[in-house]
Each structure stands twice: as structure tokens, then as C-alpha cells.
Amino acid sequence: MPVSRLYIVPTPIGNLEDITLRALRILKEADLILAEDTRTTGVLLKHFQIENKLMSYHSHNEHQVLQKIISLLQEEKSIALVTDAGTPGISDPGFLLIRECVRNQIPVEALPGATAFVPALLKSGLPCDEFVYTGFLPQKKGRQTAVQQIASDPRTTVLYESPHRLIKLLEQLLEFCGPDRQISVSRELTKKFEDTINGTVAELLLHFTQHEPRGEFVVVVEGKK
Image (cartoon, rainbow, N blue to C red; front, top):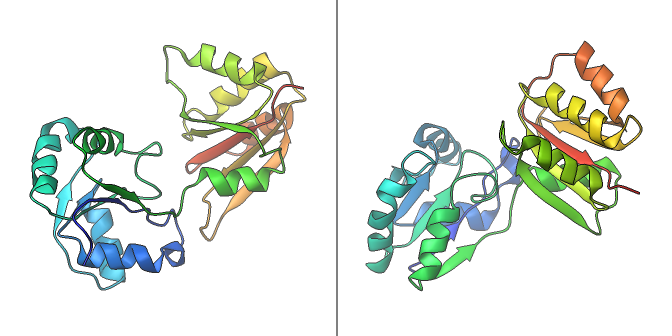
């Protein structure tokens, strides 16, 4: 049985074969699973024939349920935290709970596993000995400043973007990085229609102007030379 603690359990970002044996064991044996969307996690558990208690934990209720979860952990319960896909806390709910566990000296065990930005970075062909991960950029206030920082950073930058704002991002990169900066755009990673396009800012802006962006994107930007 898992020891009393919070387990950070990554789940597949697309291909269900990417879950680890250890993750499956923790999800089966934990006293409770915290899920961003219990329906999505329910499908995953059903696929692997796992039955366990589920409780909602997401960005809209994390403040309300935080102390309840801490109390359960202090009662020596083992709790697994998952998100809809990927690693909890990486551009997904989880940080607040993890921070509170650390403050209360509750053990936290983080399992290695799936996250979208690592395969996207590797497939870009851009330097990855040093890189910056920025997650999602601000939608409005602070967005332009964030893009300017990316443009001036000598390190490779990795970020997430929605299909609705991809064109805007590429236009801003064109403005601040110039047309010839190398970038890579990946979508549907690990899934059947996985796609990565490498090229200059100008080339990818033209491509996505002609082809409507669909899916969640990982964008990798070459550092300033």
C-alpha cells in the first residue's frame, strides 16, 4: 500500500501506453484520487480496470477544498493528484496543494511521467542544453512584455498556446523576433495525428494563416543570437 503522503501522478497526454506501472499501482492503491475532471479521469481508470474514490480538484475549487485535503493527509491518508493530461502542477492545478503540503511537512512524492513540452522541445531541433519554460502567456495584460522577453532571451523558449491565439502569437513573434527566427510548433503530441512543423516565424505564420489552427500547441522559439 502507498505510504501516507501526496502523490503527484502524471497521466498520458494522448497515448495511454505512456502511463507507468508505478502510476497505475498508486492510482489503484491510494485512499483517494484528486482529479481535475472526474469524468476524464474516470475514463482513464475504467480503461485500466481501476476502481477508486474520486474527488474534484481544479482551478475553480482548489482554495475551497484545500484544507479538507490537508486534513485528510494529516489523518495519514494517501492521496494521488492527477490532471486531465500530463503532470500536475505543470500549467495545470497542483501548485497550491503541493505548497501547502510542504508548509505542513506532509511528504510529497512526484512520479516521473508524461508532459507535453519535453517531446516538443526535443523534436524542434533547437538547443536544449539551456531552455526556458513559460507555460501559457498572459492573454492580455503583460502579454507584449512577455513576448519581448522571449525575443531578447539567448536561450530556447518553450510555451503553450491555444488554437485561438496561435496566429496572434506568431504575429507578435514576427514583430519582436523578426521573420527569420527559427521556431517549432507541435500539436496532438503522442496521438494518431501528431504533427510538428519547423521553420522560420514568417514561414509558420503563413502556414497557419492558410491552415486553421486546431488542437493545443507547444511552441518552441530559438534564442536570440
